[in-house]
Image (cartoon, rainbow, N blue to C red; front, side):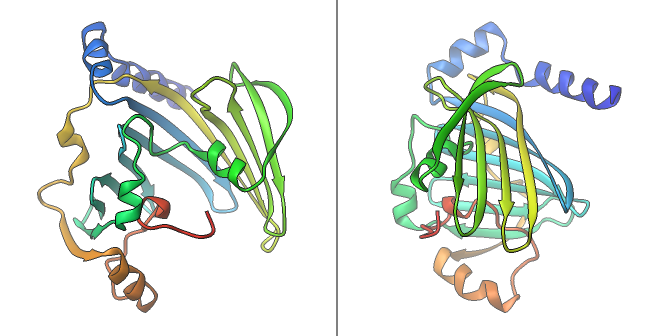
Length: 229
């Protein structure tokens, strides 16, 4: 427990901008950072998210492999840091056109659940923040979201119950930071990454065949339009 707490405190110090850097960050595209802890039947997963305007970088560990996902402009890159293998997928033009320069590309669960019909059921404090709790129950199961009531609508916790598998997954967002000074190069893949290039249509065609590099393609709504979202 002490080790985990020390890590979180170190992370907060590292990503919190100095006064001068904060002024520089606010003069450009909005920047965000958050960490998520997801627990469920599959165990615990930790993920990190950075954004600069509509650009996204995410890092997580899957089966001992550090997976980096970067979304920037026309491209969606995902690769395994251990062996350098991955994909460079050209995003669907309609998704690129929907990028919001003044928004953030992650932590949009409030908008997603509201579109699906979620309603406010109560208010309470969570992780030291006043939050509204929104819930939707349907044939798929139940989703319940704790979100701040300010204009940023920052998600704090999401509980998902899947009716078909009778499983539950909980995600907590911690250590939210904003107005960081992040260089553009942070949103580019490492030069030694060996990325197989294709467009989103080829990815969708080849994915069921299993002949692509074995990297998890996450956050699909940033790659192509999904009718289920």
